[in-house]
Length: 245
Image (cartoon, rainbow, N blue to C red):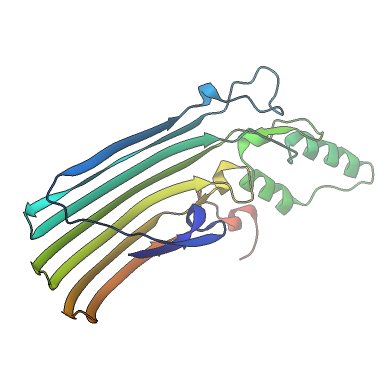
């Protein structure tokens, strides 16, 4: 079974992977695994304001495999499942536009009997989140702590039936679903990118051994992939700022 996709569900360079799924033993076998990460074991960012707490960094990942016979010597089933739920808060120092910067610019324009463009001020009020506007008029006036959220749920099902030593049929299914909300250019949570994804991959393989030198394999497969990209907050309407759109 072959699958492909972009790393981080679309934001970075991609890769293809090949999976070899084996089943066919008359003994039941399987395993269970779990991985956990917590900010308790991490260090605080060196650029965090004095007195800040460690940003949340949590990753829960687990799963299982289970294989065995349905009809010994003939029909075999293999199952695998995996989940990941992760959350990581930003810890980034940045310089952003704030009320203090607006006030300083307004005072500067007033010296020349000028006033700020009302549309520009409306866009500032509309597009910049309230929690970013309280910083002073200086560099490094904003410390971003918004959370990135990820989840992924994956399943594999493989069913094999051996009609004889020379004739077999195999069916395989791979399903994946997940969502994420993470920064792609802006440290404001409203402009984080959301990228929900759904994948369904199904195949049927019929294998015939015609003789010691000739093997015939017939494969039918289909794949469904859907992923959409949007801002986390899609409620902005620039016309409300006075733009004639």
